[in-house]
Length: 230
Image 1 (cartoon, rainbow, N blue to C red):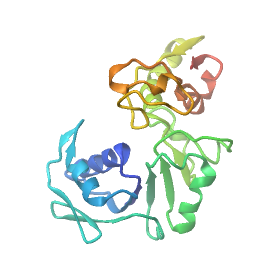
Image 2: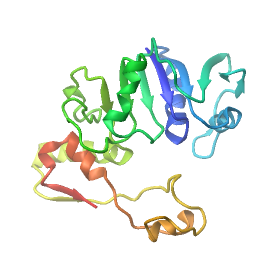
Image 3: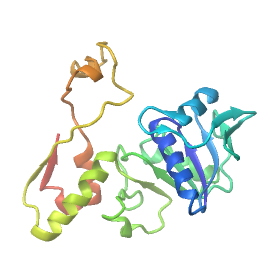
Image 4: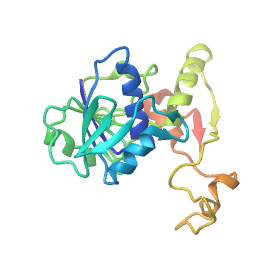
């Protein structure tokens, strides 16, 4: 299957690392392109030197429009103009969350779109399903654009599904302790809307909201009135 990755930040780089690891034993996924507006020499460095996952087992570098990983060469871009021949584009930029903003990818040639975050806005949930593998992936009916929900939803949904099947959940409250993310501040710095998010991420426990419960309801609609989160 031919894969294109849009957005080569935290999630996009993890996706590529996972594909590289899988292909060591089961080489059935071909990354045919990656798009990100950032400097590709720096992105190649960040792929090889990951503060969380450690060193990549192969050298990564950028040269002449390609990301070179060992003997593998992947074309890279700073904008998307053509997706002909792409089986799946994995949208990891965090910029395009409403289904209507993803509809351009099939027009450019991609057969399927997988969003690495929950959908936002108003949309038809049957046309644009939220699928958590192992929980409701069997509901997939060949839709062109699919969300894989969020990291928190992928953590909580399997547990909720098992508990609900075994005991039937009557009432529940979701609380997540989350690592800090790239939209937070490393030092105290004014946030446009939230005083709490103005505090230094690494030095503070910052109470905030989560949309994980909403995404959970998309995957397990029978828990819509039973599981809550803020």
